Image (cartoon, rainbow, N blue to C red):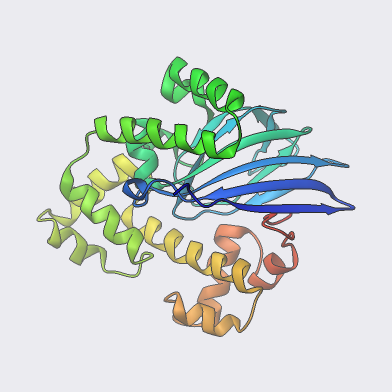
Length: 284
């Protein structure tokens, strides 16, 4: 049986976009949340607010480049075609420069570490060209995906490549286990207990974790909790914010709102108001 692909289409005064969403091969699901193939043509440049979460996306682009705005000075930007990211603890503003088609692999942070085959300390809060992290093989893969016959064929090729790269990666099993557990529990756990569980001192655990992930365990735990909350907000369209806050481990509404301001730059209500239809994300 072939993989199931969810097709989403949108057309409005904003423009047109299509997404093709599918799960990876079952073996890869601890490392890849989903594949999202997409094409877009808007009537004017559209800037989206991308939020920090458990996801570290890698983009294989066959069209116009993306514009990544400077977080401190949004009048400055760099343009990237195909690119990789590390872990983030702040939002990013990403704009389109024209019609494009691409495949986005939504790696978990652990999956990105294994796929890229290098510690993520130098990729924290960064978007880098794919060539910088996986050399010419990345360029060849972009060409193969662009020439493939449809989304299903592209996703099959990604399964094959990601399995190969992750299978060849090396990372201490204790650290892999700890990262799996932190992601599975959306950061709702004691960092001290996690260090004890892997048999390391707290100081050694924090040092090794920060080296491989690019964020300290405490910061990543906050990001994971926020990521779960922002996804709930996007999925259910609001609902009772207090319930979302409680379900995601926030002590009170004020703590919930402070984390949203820190990680998204806006309040939960403001973020909800910026939501685009049909999996379009959030307007920046």
